[in-house]
Amino acid sequence: MGQDQLMLEYKTFNLHDMLGKSCHHIRLEGKHQLILKGDESLEIHADEDRIEQVVINLVNNAVKYAKGSKEIHIFTEVDPEFVKVSVRDFGQGISEAVIPHLFDRYYRAEHAGKSYSGLGLGLYICSEIIKKHSGKIGVNSKIGEGSTFWFTLPKKKPGKIPAVTV
Image (cartoon, rainbow, N blue to C red; front, side, top):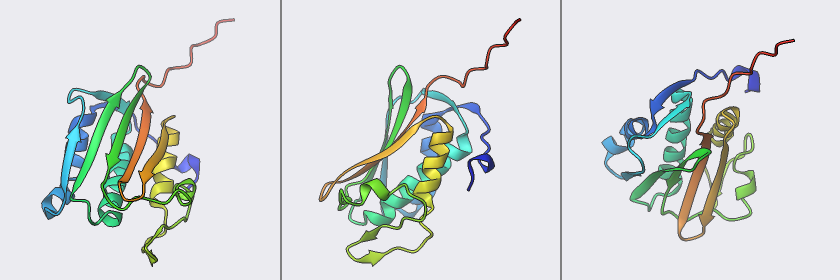
């Protein structure tokens, strides 16, 4: 997917509400408990559908790769410049050798010798969406303790370029 094909439609929306609704399919299955923590009144200016796509992908990965993790935590944090969303699982974690490649195009993780189906585009597309929003994406993980995938988005609306008067 080239950068140009990823068109963003910005609007202002309540991040907490979107996160609460986005992973309804996981709640319906009833195998995992999604725990949402953060400012319930937090509004951001971004492409809601694309950000939801990123969150669903991160939660689906937590379900797929962290089978023993009954709880998946979604946190929102705010600092003066950015909003940060984290998806934490309590699975087996990811080895340090793998982490630098997770967001590469076509990279597929192998866990305990098992290869998972899919083209390996999920995290790559997530990273493209977040970069296009001028944000950052990453992961913190410890073997045996689980993984936290996170992304940041700028808090401010993308500014209009001021007109230059000559």
